[in-house]
Amino acid sequence: MKVAVVILGLALAVAFGAPLAAQDLQPPAGAAATVHRAVLPSGAVLLVERVPGAETVALQAVFPGGTRAEEPESCGIHQLIARLFGRKTSRHGVGEIGRLLAEMRGRLEGFAGRNSFGLFAEFPKDRAREGLALAADSLAAEFPEREVLRARDELLSAIREHEEDPAAAALDAFLDTLYRAHPYRLPLLGRMSAVADLRAPRLREFYARAARPDRLVVAVVGDVEPASVVETLRSRLAAPAQKTKSAPPPAVPLEPLPDQPRARAVVRAIAKTYLVVGFAGLTVQDADRHALQLAGALLEGPAGISPRLRAAGVSASSLNVAHMNGIEPGFFAVVAAVEPSQVARAKDAILEALRALAGSLAPAEELERVRREALEAATLARTRPAARAAELAYAELFGLALGAGGADLEDLSRVSAGDVQRVSRRVFVERAPVVVTVGPGARPAPAAAEEKK
Image (tube, rainbow, N blue to C red):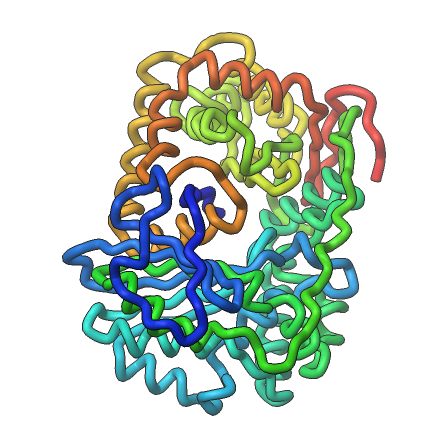
């Protein structure tokens, strides 16, 4: 789950058929000098960042959608579409794109998340023009029935495997308990019953509405000339000859945060109990999101949750922090695998660790360590065209007013112990906990009055 930066500034409208001179592309005001933004005639937004010396050229194409735009009866449709990118297009038959990718030493794959879907591609810089054209052509996806059925069976197998994973099942149950109406409650891969009913005609109709060019953001990063990239992609990202009304924005329920603790137990005949202790999280626009990121890193560190579990006599075979910043409030959760007899103690120890961050300032050395590691990881990612393209595309899609010149890194570097304490109080103290178990053990003792689900 990537939270990214937005390119600020004015859009450049590129006219149909007009010659595009290099000087016509301007970097947005306040953005890094190598980042350019254009709005193509179709309405697609194109971001290009030139990185001299980069060995590869990466493209990230994203549409709004994903789980947030699904309902129980359509849960998994974006995942199925993502698996069909690159199989057949209006220009390329079944198998042809795969052969071209192998010959170019490139890669192309679809993806679908909670807030978006699209495709990613990367090619050697000496094949950039034909690679970018192939990636753009892949957005003109066609859905032959045989390929749809094949991809559907693959997705059903992936869902079945996911459901058999107790850690994944625990997180899914947590989300279904945290959210009662919001589509974030739906499983990311989809539901077996919904996916089993999907056929080619429905996918064609859905894709024609959900994947219109005026909903599209494309980011290209590498050693490329911005004007050349626009010239390559302009005609391939043109509006369809047959106009299709864009799908209306999904009616996402405005769900209040839980005001009372919630708990749920899922009985499964396994050796360990998978415990999730979590809360409603933040949005992608929230000023405290960087502080919550560092709070999660502190909790996973040597002075975080682990020593409290040991002090409580709990042996956790796995311990992870999972969190997502959403368009609406996301989630923050701790997932641990413990002995069934230790569930209540483990839950209490986790809550104590979370609330300790709200009760006192984080140790300066620990905060400096996690901040340095986060900055190093983010800085390294920016040197990779693939990661940078994803960052730019998601930022534009989500409208994050962070700038392209490293403003988000500056925000991360300025997170103080007081910031971590404040967001910990917001999320871990002022909000009601949600506790879920999957396993043979007894239901955990409630943190307070619980609602059964």
